[in-house]
Image (tube, rainbow, N blue to C red; front, top):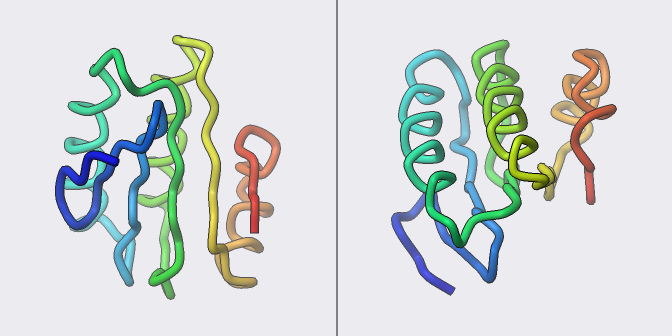
Amino acid sequence: MEQITDEFAIIDNFLCIRMPKEVDHHGAAGIREGADRLILDDKVKNVVFDFENTTFMDSSGIGVIIGRYRKISCFGGKVYAINVSDRIRRLLSSSGMSSIIEILS
């Protein structure tokens, strides 16, 4: 495992992103920039969003996920969501995200 920051780690060929407590416009920019830098690394083939600590997410968070999905799917990769609360699961489902990403918990 290569721990890049508190938010980002690369495990095998997975970029693991620990989402913050609140994913809004301010937090989304840092996630987007950090993830994009690491996705360009040849070692990253899939992206895992970890929502363990997340209690709130607005459309900015959906945008982060869609953007990373578009980038990684160009390389044949997949996007996963783990540790999803009922609230975040409803948001992902109602936004249509559950049809393009795999929700594992």
